[in-house]
Length: 140
Image (cartoon, rainbow, N blue to C red):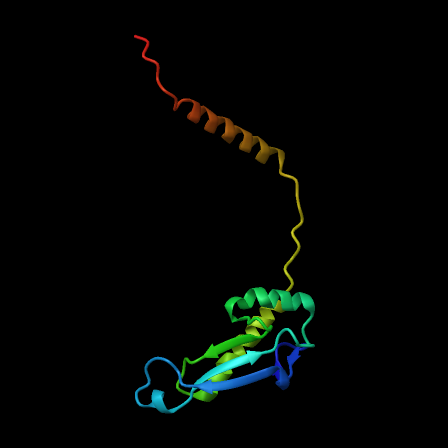
């Protein structure tokens, strides 16, 4: 069970982990030990997440979201498999926490009279500058 917050928890059947050898430095250890963790979360099939949360999660996940609706997170920072598992799970939890926050709806407001006047003044000044850029007549 992976707890996201007080009300949302991810069941173990929704998560699957696979281990393989990590990239990068590590000496002889890197060729022998499978320390990199690939955490797969079946987000589309999750009963714990609502449809709007899943939509926000899909946008947040980006390329980590697969065609079959799963999120794949790879962690290979440390030489410890256990620590990499913790890192991957924490990344997933943080991503879901961000998706749980509903964005505030923007309230449309009318522009102030002062801002309208400033805009129109700027347009006229700009128009004057452009009109002065024309060809100069040589009247001697």
